[in-house]
Image (cartoon, rainbow, N blue to C red; front, top):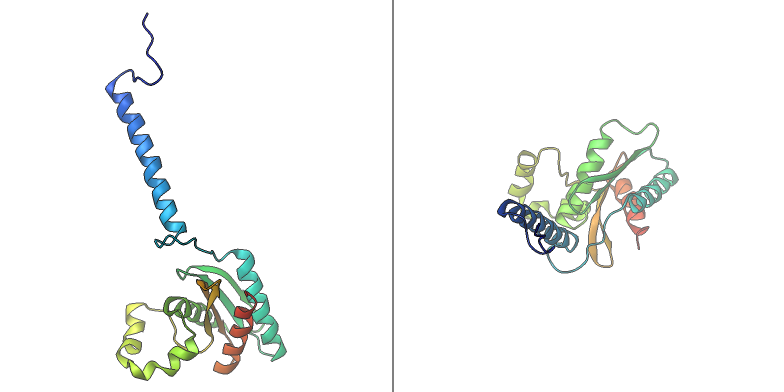
Length: 178
């Protein structure tokens, strides 16, 4: 009985199966590399649950200092919710508003306070935004992008206080990342 060396295949089907398996592995490796480098070659810094919780706790601390029950949402750089917390007695819509503010801040890479102040420069965008991305982005004060080492890692959104109170609490949360 003749034995095949380990580098030879028994038949064409086995060769194709191994080739297909190796190709799948290489493609997934390439995609993983592109995803963790954000297609730029630079390593992405991820928004982790630990970072998001630290941000939310700092924001809630500021909210308790000004005696306002607020909700805090933290999203990653793609707008996916990573962490949400709601203080006792915070309004029931604050979940939606805080998340939408966080998404707007992460998406536009600037504070929602700044976006609100500049909305008159491009009113068509802001009037059409609710129909394009319903309940996804709220350009209202209380949202800030989160940067770490000059890279966007996510956004924070606060709901439950006045525009200025929400903004101040968001600043406190974002400042905890430095």
